[in-house]
Image (cartoon, rainbow, N blue to C red; front, side, top):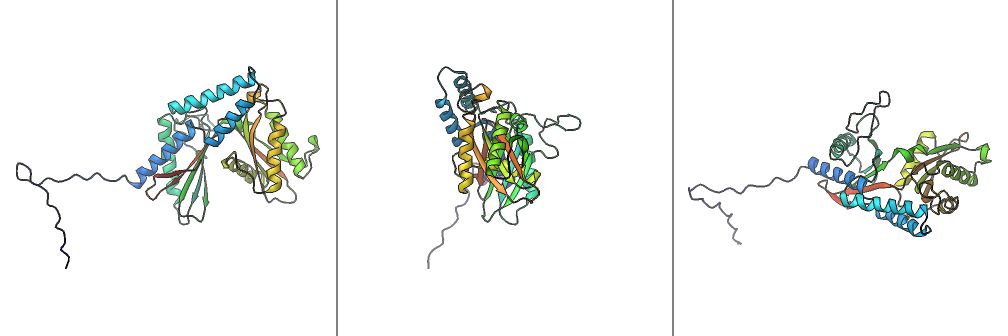
Length: 321
């Protein structure tokens, strides 16, 4: 029969009393979740994802030397580098805080909502978020970035066991140049087809000029009702800039929009040049026969979007971008 190992006894100290080894308690799931959420907010605010930085550097290389466009792109690049180095917000407008949660069945959405609100308050205190959210009726600023509808949190159930949290910070300047069209749109002779969709998307780009802090990225939804269309158009901005639409016709339209927009001569910040758009992402929702909406969300060059997959103890297991 195998002999059992005897447990080691605590050694007595000089006074004859036994020493006790103090155990360091493991971080609670709630504290781990808070740490992960704050780290997500910090990185989203200060560091652009690799796919976004890549297209910005490509845009800089395209611009002609010693032009205002090249100067503007160099300023953008310097801003990106400095924000990353100092872990400070890329822009003084840290924008609307939009969370997108993919969770397994049986998940407690209310509990996570409260934890997200706590993390937003703390991140604001730490300076990762600016005090941007105000009461729409009074203009009062609580300084906490918390209020009705803010942060904006969207839950989606998926078939995986993991919890994924994506975050987008969308500034007011680019939000202001978003647009929604109802086809047919007679001023452009835009009918209820993809050519009509193309016409209104390019019209939105032309009207935005440099007011959306270009070069930017478009998220577009064809169809849906007015509300669902705008929500879907923003969710298109969660796609990587370098991905390709699985729908053949939409993939072709995405590419055409970018090429055509970059021939308009609007350029970075509206100063002229070869880069007006960095990307365009399009999807479609079912609609009623009486309605044909095209909803367009514009994202500025400060394309702050990041995501994490959490582990069993709410630690960051994987960065998604």
